[in-house]
Image 1 (spheres, one colour):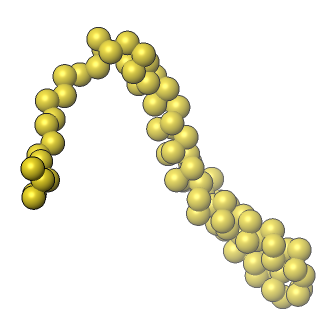
Image 2 (image 1 turned 180 degrees about the vertical axis):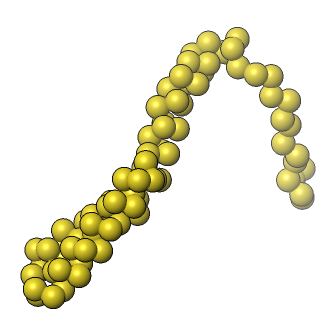
Length: 81
């Protein structure tokens, strides 16, 4: 995954330099999209993995017997009577 991120970063920088020298806005837009993709890819992939594995964990919400015993008791607010 990091190889893809570094590759997209290098391609984006190369397009940025080429678009700036040729004064071509379309190449600059492509460079911006590729650089944004390379920067956001790690967060997107991690979020996708967490969301995909969360569907397996959500099965315990259907059957309450599978849920762990949470003994959390909130403390009362100050000044509340």
